[in-house]
Amino acid sequence: MKKIFTPLIAVLLFVCTTAHAYLNTGRYELSGSKDSSGIIDYTGEMIIERQGENYRITRYLDGYQSEVGIGILKEGGLFQNDILSVAFCDLTGDVWGVISYEVLSAYELEGKWASSEAYTSGREFLTWVSY
Image (cartoon, rainbow, N blue to C red; front, top):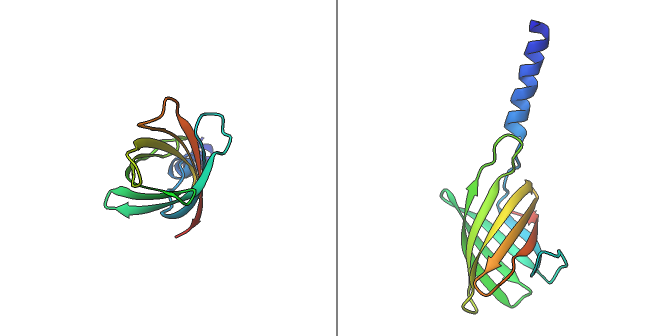
């Protein structure tokens, strides 16, 4: 019994410590849709920087729209991904909103968003590029 129990404990400890993805800071390529269809309506880039326990977010969409935001990370548990929740404001207009990203891996995030002008929620995809 002891011969089976020891390897089982080792495997469980490994799984428990590696089950969720790590959030990289830096520059991400961004693509998104204005509804839940997943058809890409816009592209851009997003920069994620640490700000103490929080994250400072800067977004550039299609070369004309700039947004800033603040994010908080909820760490996932066993077999659950981390969630990055972001409140943002558009610098070129009067739009604000929220995005909730699931950290799929150290290099990919998938989010769902809504803005103050929207009646539906959109989807967004981030791919890490560099620090």
